Length: 252
Image (cartoon, rainbow, N blue to C red):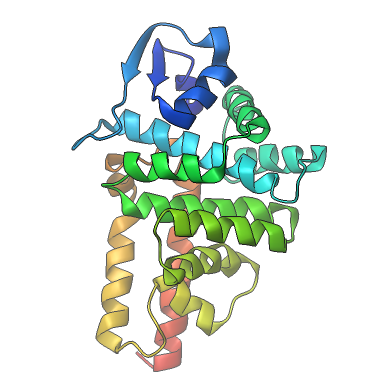
C-alpha cells in the first residue's frame, strides 16, 4: 500500500491541526480509523513516514489550488491530475482515490494558499529541498495538459515565494519540468541552480550536490515516499542532461 493509502489504512491517521489537518479530516471523514499519530508543528526530528505523509498532502492540496487558479476546476483538469498520479507517480487506483478526496476537499476549501504554505514550510523546515520538489511537481502537474497557463505560473510562483524560495529556485523548478519538453542551454544552468557566469568548479559542485541529494536512498531517508520515486528518477535525468549540456558547451 502506498503513502496515500496509508492515510486511511493500517491504523494510521494524522492529526496535524491547522489547514492541512482540517482538510484531511474533512476529506477522510469517518474513513480515518485506528491510532492517530500526532505530528507537532515544530519538531527537531520526524519519522520518515511522517515526512512522507506531509509531502504527499502538500503536493495534493496545493495542486488543487493551482488547478483552481483560473477560478474553476474542470473535469478535464481533474482527469489530468489523476492521469499524472498514474503515469508520473505510478500510483495505484486505491491511492489515487484517496488523493482525489484530498484534492477535492482542498479545491473546495476557502482557506487561502498562504495558510497551507505557512504550515507546510514549518513542517518541512528541516527539508528545504522538499519545498523545491513540491514546486517542481506543481509545475509538472500544471503542464500535464500540454500548456503552462499564465494563471497557473502566477500561483506557483506565489507558492514558491511563500515557501521563501528565491527566484532562482523557482526558475530551477520550472526548468526541470521544461527539460523534458525541449530545453535550451540556459535551462540547463537553471536546472543546476547556478548562473551561466559560474566557474567550472562551481558548476561541478552544483551537479555533485544535486546528484547526491537525488540518490534514491537519500531521498527515502529524507521523506520522499516510493510513490514519488518516478518523479525523482525524472529529476535526476534532468540534472544529468543539464550537466551534459553544460559540459558540452564548456568543453569539459
